Image 1 (cartoon, rainbow, N blue to C red):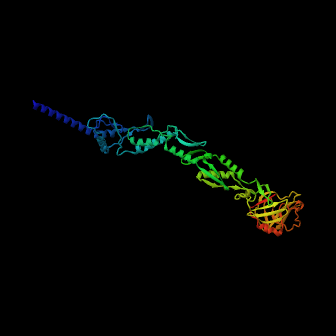
Image 2: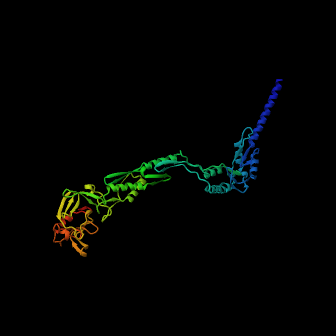
Length: 460
């Protein structure tokens, strides 16, 4: 009895082993039931039969993105040959399981003799089609930081409808030999509000409004702060921003009002110690607001932290302004020429010390040819010179002088007058000059030598 049981058990084991061997052999030589290669069902087939079926298979050449048919192609042969058998055998090994599997598996296989239609021609058509479609689709909007009316804000992102062409083409390359190519719809994604790039934009904007340009005018410094003059800004590859030029120009105008001297009254202490107020005429300077505003804007652009006033203007002979570098004695300094019409005398000072004084004859009063009062400056010096012009009773005259130092564009200046015989203190009332300061020839050289170009001339 025991022997009979052993025989039955042994026979059962043999049957099982043979069955397992048969299953193993089958699994080694046949594809599992739910296996496809390039959308062609090869389940239950050997590698040889699978390649035969693939050789007979066609490609529909349709491309879907999501549920949308993007390309409708013409049916073509898949292009498989016996040369592709080794790769099919490799897939057979790859999908092998010990026991039969009903799990769906889809493989993509590129034929050895594959033409360029799928890999190049169709891919280019797909790319062209997607790019063309994108033109009519809503683009995503990136979140980005910007400066608006002086405040940093972050504009929210908005989803779009445009396809991510690069990712779809990458996905296409993985399925390009399926009969029908089905790509998952992938859309361009906007940059989100919490992205590093937006944080970087905020940091750049903060740095921008944190800039300061110190603007030095003579011995005073005025600060222009980015937070006060930069109102709107965006950050892309380059910083783009608009500055409130009105704010800059207003501040420069205020500087002109408080500090510039052109056309203003000067407080002046005469030789006698009397303090007078005298109108500035040609002597003085002012800031060119428009040009200096541009320089301040450029300083912000370049990140320059301080600049000196440069575009200073004046009137008369020197249009660049006179007296800008003089801050002592209420802007007149210690080197100047003082002319008193009442006293008919001049005083020439250099570095605060009187160098020469003399009686003179100024413009004729009774014919309204008075030497003009105000603060002027020596335009230039010339020795000798020929004076040409007109005067009451003599519309055209020309006369040679040894020394000439004009201080008005109308032709008034210091010169010697060898022809004059009346040097009385009241001569100017009826026998004065045509507006010039007639100076005795004997002392004119000393006066001339102690006058400097652009020094102030105070006439009162």
